[in-house]
Image (cartoon, rainbow, N blue to C red):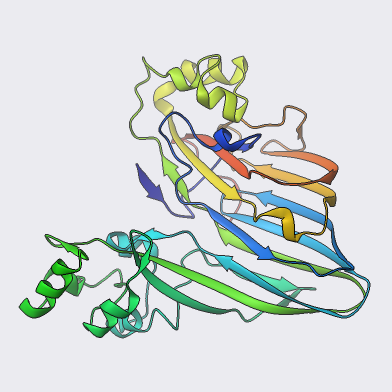
Length: 330
């Protein structure tokens, strides 16, 4: 699989109903964002959450209610990304070597994460880490003078390092031939003060997509009745027929948004609204729950009350490669 980056992403959506709902027989959830993560104190609740998934982004709008003045810590971890794909991960500034060497304390915001509180932008604190098999190897790389990331216009120095640096990287398992073996992850956080009453927090980020490059049209059991993708994304006969009428017209992607663990939410969400925009009328979209309502030629809505998000939102797209997406980047 490969990963795709906005704005050239379009998706269809599924509200996952269990741990397997975001996976399809060997296909993992790919690069998924989780968050924001928070632990509400006593006397606070999430009154409302709106999730909007469009061609360009995922937008989350929370309304918190507090009985008194409170301080809450929020964090948001971007998905861990392969450093070999540095040109896709982040475009660093012109002095990309210096930016890559500072990427631990000045992290790359490769999902364009943004937060607003009552319509005012929030300055995010953050850090970046290099990881190898789950172990933090940031210090090892920086001590060797190796940037954690490389800009899109530069040849990464780890592809042709000095002999002593190569030896050190290879001995640590960080370099295999000329490929960097580590990954990069950025974490962001902010402390939010709440006054008595309601506070609206909006979080937006650019979604990621995994491209299903290994399917064949004459053997596609995943979307057959009872197939794993059919179960995960509630694919119906109408969509199946539409796809097979012109199967070579579509590229297929999945996108997943993972909700943070809800044990810090102080109970269920009072009002929940999910809005999905598939980007163009000719794209095909499969999603759960089946009770979702079409509200425009490209958008769908599902609402409920007293809702606890447990598993996340799995997204599937049959993207018509002959159709330009409608609208502009959000």
